[in-house]
Length: 481
Image (cartoon, rainbow, N blue to C red; front, side, top):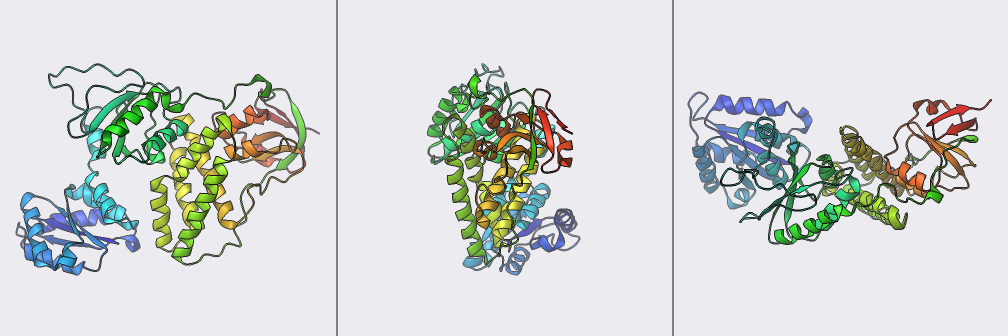
């Protein structure tokens, strides 16, 4: 675990900051934190020898992040590195993060098992939320106006703005996608950047959200970029110009988002008239009672193999227009945030099954909390991925739970893979207790001509074999006596 060292001119200030940060995590999860502050408990100043002694006490840590308050504290920390052996000094990083906010972020991040780079990055970004809240419209750094104080010409939809900065590439894009940067266009964006030697960050200028790492699909969709809003892109690194060119071309093509429904063929439109049949309760979750956790290396291997199996299954699930939906889900599985979090949990002793379930559960909950109803439906996609990973980890068949007699299927929610692979001879129609029309499962089911009644909680009271009649046009069902 990464350890933290607070170097401050004031001993009481340092102790108070540590006490505040410590409240953010459970005692058993707190990283080691030491203080080298003041010349003594009451005299203001810094002492390089005290800093060196504190570093020695933290020498068993994987790495040490040093947070400082004022300029001379930096000098004391740098001098202390000359007092300790080179092996210890190599593990130490002096951060430019703000002391209080940075320490809180560092404690929380280090408690999750993150490495030194990530702990330092989160600490240095700790002022961002305050800046966005207080600085007018919440504009991120680099959003200043033109040098003469006049506003530049607004970018046209799908086009970049003005000239790049000398040190990197920065431009704005106005979103003209009807549903904004939802899962499919966001996945296209993440995929387009893969392979470039560049770091790209995105922010929502219209709301002040971000900046976020453009390699993370969950982070990109979390910006909730809607039609008409401005996305700011900042690219740094040797291939920043190439990344810009790729994204500008993608934006001109509306991020590949040319479809709302996977097909507009009228012949395959879902029936709207009443459909009658027996209830078939469809259980999609796998039986995990036989799963036996192993050591961390084995669990990581199991997870990697399951991820590869689900990726292959998704990409083979449906050809043509529907492939875009499953491609977006595959990009979710490739999210580096997902990989880091699951690997940390496994390294800390969790099983692959437990780690995948917990991390994807948290991700789904994050989507469920979004204000945009269209993006909120993407929580369904994440829960589908969690279910597929569990199936892969337990060795269950992809179609487990769907070998039922013909009838009206009743499910908690309808995911894309279930809608795409449902046996039309067995599935006369579907009722879900949650979800809506903008879910990917609903879109695919309609395109296949499956009658749907969506998001009716009372359906949970239906019994298997009970005769019902569904009315898709009214989004309702009734029991048939």
